[in-house]
Amino acid sequence: MDHAVKYSILALTGVKGELEGMTSAELVRLPHLGQHTFYQLYCFGPQLTTEHEIALLLESSKYLEMRDETRRSSCKGLIYVLEDRSKLKSSFWRRAAWPELNMHLMAFTKSGNPIYVSYFPLARI
Amino acid sequence: MKPSANSKPEFDLVWKVAGLKTKEEVYSLWSDVGVLSDPEQARKRGEQLVFVVRSPKGKVIAESTAFKVPVRQLRNWFYGMRLMVTSREAPPGLLPELARRTVEFLESLPRTDEHERCRGVITLVENERLKRSHTKAVWPASGMVYIGNSAKGHHLRVRYFKDEVINGPSSMLVG
Image (cartoon, rainbow over all chains, first blue to last red; front, side, top):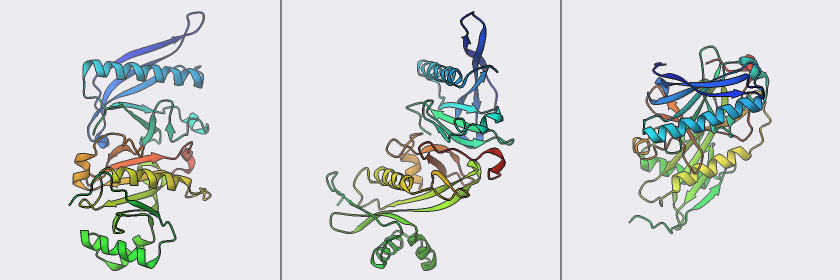
């Protein structure tokens, strides 16, 4: 992947103001996705519940889509790598498509982590 | 003359029940458009027919076929779907409709074979004209999602079955 820009998007704080989790993103170009540009999303927070993690990803996706529309960049959508392989024991995370995030399994990393892709509504290849 | 949008083609579902007469009509179509001229290959493909589409006059104008295939990139099994539409006689929108119906039918099949369980449908878009005209990252009618190019530069698209899960890491097909 060609790393270009990386920045934080959202932070999720608990009722006492403590940091529970956050997302960040960077622009990447994937050779086997026709060299198109995507935002790769990252999510941090070891204590995050599944519900909160999905909410963070969803809000971050909406933000990136809006940002992309405003800037009229040529990003096609989002990439998310499921880094925590222990999650693959869960049937929830092993779903081939995640409809709530509009994500679809696209490939695996060399080490076997699933890579998901979500396209912006008007994306063309 | 190109048919109007009102010409309604007839979709015959022939999965595993295609008769010899239907198969011969399809072989003839393949031969006319210059694909599968080898009789043995045509016979094998004939066993994979899903839909045969006829014009209002009864002529075969399109077909779809499917077969089970392990996909290394996705480390799981899928139905490989092939679609063929004759450009001269097909009404507008026939290809997406054929894709949608074929995907929905394949999704309705029982998935009892755990070892080779199909997680969805995959297709390879080889036709250069199609690659230029059907460029939406997600095909709206069938939900086929672009997931990259093959080594030959053809477009790979996939549609997962609802609620289907992928194999765990220990049992995945190794890419």
